[in-house]
Image (cartoon, rainbow, N blue to C red; front, side, top):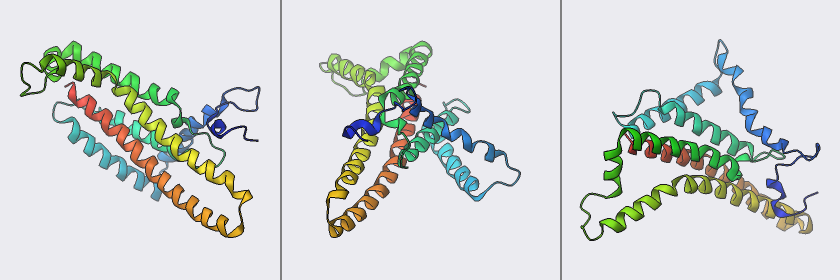
Length: 225
């Protein structure tokens, strides 16, 4: 029985009240054995073509100064977020990406690694990023403050953007679903069409948000080289 609207985001399970719902994050591991089949399925051919397209795009974003193989980090990140976003659209499966615990765990270490690498290996380059080219001398102190703050809040914006988008869609689907039993047949039919349309929209949001997270992480990485 749902106690409140936000109980769909509760990771606690009925087994000794443990947070076992987080285990849904690892459901993607079940897809790994099929990748080693002698004859790849149509699904794997399709998925590999998507990953190769992303690999080429991320390689372009990183530029010639990017390290070899670094695109695979962002391709893997995209795959993980996309899978968890889609899993959350299925009934009775916990949406782990709707929690800041997971999104910050992905965003914060990445940003921290980029910052440490940049400031240790390319200190002068990092200082030049604080003052954009063509900034008047009077505005330079303010620009340093603004650029520093915008740099610090990057992992927070990455994490909150993903979590907020997942929460918003799921809340709307839950809210509309709960009102169904008390409505007439005609209104329920309209509600059902609305729910299907909203589910299609949520599927698009799941793809877009995972892509945005991966692309922004790639851009942050390219800035420190």
